[in-house]
Length: 336
Image 1 (tube, rainbow, N blue to C red):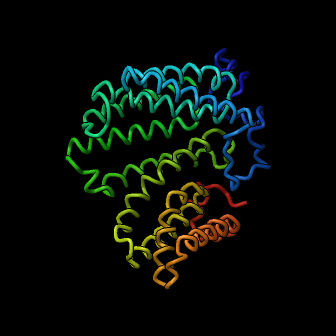
Image 2: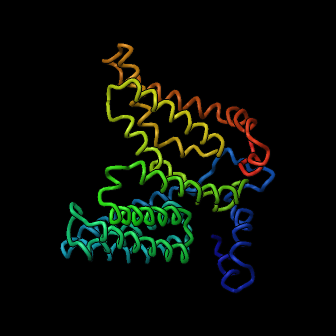
């Protein structure tokens, strides 16, 4: 957030909610309402090459720090990386407001807290970590995400916290019913993915014009929810790598996801299913007798689908939005 707005909040001149509404007009990070285009799905990752330059330095520094400290054990090394990530965020996130470095520092901090908690309980390695240990580590990572959000307000923090909560709930399900996530992945992962998707939609519906940081929060939540929903379902459909029926089911699921993505105007929903679409295309192409070139043709087909969706996104949105009730359309981003 703009340093002046942070100072105004600290002085009690305005509250944070008002500051969030004012931020796009002061920083230039988003256009005013009359010129904004929600269909563009803007996401602030890089404000200049300095973001990339700093990110390279952070990855090298934190990676080397963790490696050198690993001689003392995983838990101490992870604690050191977490502490370093927090201190670096005080400058690069809180003062400089660099987007990409802030994302890297948040991920490093939450992941390191998870690893340090797991390491303290389990020792080295994760080959036989127990559900109870995973539960404690997930809770620790959730608390870390909450503390980081209260201090720095990086949009991806909500998704990181949701991922930590999901990890804790998965561990809890394993404690209640041993082996449940592994033996019934759809039953355990699908409700979690749908809950995260619902949270993403809550943020989306609170900012239909996509002018505040709530739209970035929603983006990261959609990006997290998509694989949790998609992978367990499609993985079961692709168990038989030569099944034409499985390939057809994958294509059908992709079409459903495409419709959902168009309606809510979030392309991130489709990203997780592209690899499965490539599998389905390869199976269908091999069945057509083009076996020797199937990988290249599959990639060509998936690339063509992505490009066609991108080119026809607005007309397709307009068509599907026209089929929805007016009350539901009013709660979704408008079609430009």
